Amino acid sequence: MKKLFFFCFFSFFILKTQAQRPKMHLKAKIGLQSLSFVYKEEAISREYFGGFHGGFGFRVMQKKKMGEINFDFIRNYLYLEQPENGSIIYKQNSFELPINIGYITLKKPLIKHFLYGGVVTEFKIKSKLIFLDLPDTDPINLKPRELGLSNPNFHFRFGTQIDIAMFNLDLNYSLGLNKSLKENYRTQSHSLKFSLGLIF
Image (tube, rainbow, N blue to C red; front, side, top):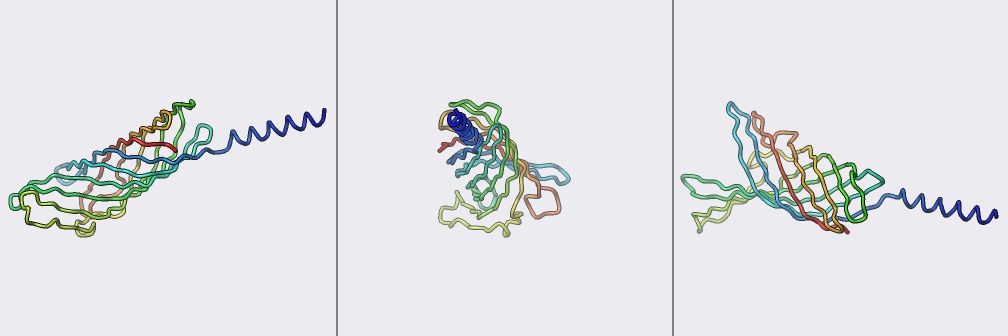
């Protein structure tokens, strides 16, 4: 009887420990994004970028809590018109390191829903100007400091995720916490991202 009691107690302890053990997922993702810069001078103006992103990350879940770190590569485009150079495409590459914490609102075997918030550190890598109306002109590569870009940038992010089986849908919004440009006036960024990912 004592042996049976000890066996049952030991089995319950093992199952309880395994149930509380954090579960980690690897996530690979691609997606689209919309980025805007708000220039707060005497008059407020905006510039809009479109682009895409891809990357991978790690997500840990324990009970109703989640934590996540991602490594994202971003490419944004801006279409410009200049009297002297004609049509120009400005291409900006950057790298983001988001760290998120959140809450699992729904946790079923085939579907899960998350709400999260976090901080993003963004590093501008390089920019390129492509002259569409001057085909004999080589693209110009520019470094962030040559454009007066602040580097790094920090953002506050909040969003939501849904897991459907092995697929992950993610929608998030980021607000710039420091100036995007090294100017006297305030320049703030706003970013909306949607991504489709695979969970491993």
